[in-house]
Image (cartoon, rainbow, N blue to C red):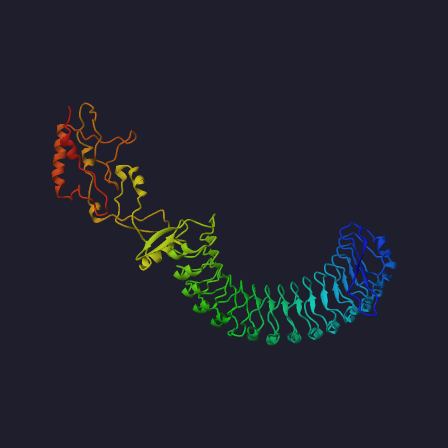
Length: 579
């Protein structure tokens, strides 16, 4: 339960009595009716009873004509007594989040009322008398099911804040242009299709919210709102913008996302204070070069458009913190992006980038780099010097920091990882072009894998391999020398068998070609062919050795640095056969 609290006012002047203001606060107290302690308060000026269960006010309450602040928000009031007009000193009245369906016309007697909040009530209409409260500076009417405004709303010339969000308003009355002192106007989430020609008379407007309507155009004289700083006209049906929009000298935040815009005004040289620009989900195909004259721009977002190129003048935007160009058709990111050294977020996912500029190494403050779903085959080496906390390369990437590996690209070094190249066909096209071909020497880790393969299926090694779509696979091309060499042991394996089994005392040195010079050791699962043979077999082996004398010397290392195994003839001569 609340109590009356007295508080001394300002210091008294000569000849004036000291003034004490009385407050009664009982918010969130589960009250069903007005507490009787309220009536014991002397000179009660502020009464706060929000978030209770009060459904009505007693008549004697309206005799407390000293009240200046009354907060009855979040209660169960379904009606308001006509005696409300007796509270002639009321300055701030908050009746939001109740169940009010109607308001008495006696509101017009509240000549001192400056702030009125009626949000979240099923009102549907406003009394004409409300527009006679000439002292009003702030009206909050969000979510009250309004379909129209009173025709005489223009009488509230002192109004500075008007919030009408989440209603069903289709148009504004002609007198609306008389609200010349309006500084903040929120008409978001309504059904408006057009603004009246007098709208541009709101010369003192600072904040304008027109999002989630059905606007197809803005007035041509929109540029007359010279004091406008923030404008949100997203989620509409705009197809064109007036050229005067880009001449607003005080504009700092502009959001025109989710419209049907195909082009922007051509000259943005006067919007030098522009700080934020969002044109997401439109049909813009080109960024005007003059946009790069907005030297104070910090956030630039054109997600889901049809942009193909970014002007090189983007390097003039040295204060940029965030650039989002996802889902466009950008093929090249200009090197001048490296001049935007304040960048912390660079997101260019779902484009057609085949490489990133080398100057990206200059973005020392970059925190997030998102290049998912492009056509990148590798990253410039300078990426490793950045101190980013997230590098996104693949839509199924689980960790924000994938491990990067250095690769050789002609005369320079680049970076790649398991998520690169991003596009199989595009990577093949890039490699076939030549200048950006990635060449990698045969990795040492391939040797154990080759030794585990059977000799009959051994593949000749290559001198060099070109990195394909997956970095784990390399395309092997046999050299001319190894392509013509045939195993010497294979014919001997089908020689005339001996009548009695012969036990081999030493394993054969004949084995598959391996990346190392060490001979293969046979296992039980893969028995070696015995180098011990019958006299007839030995004769056959000697004959084969003579016939192969014209072949390249197997003791000389191959061109790719892999030594061939010695011929079985030598083993036969050093180990006589046993019969």
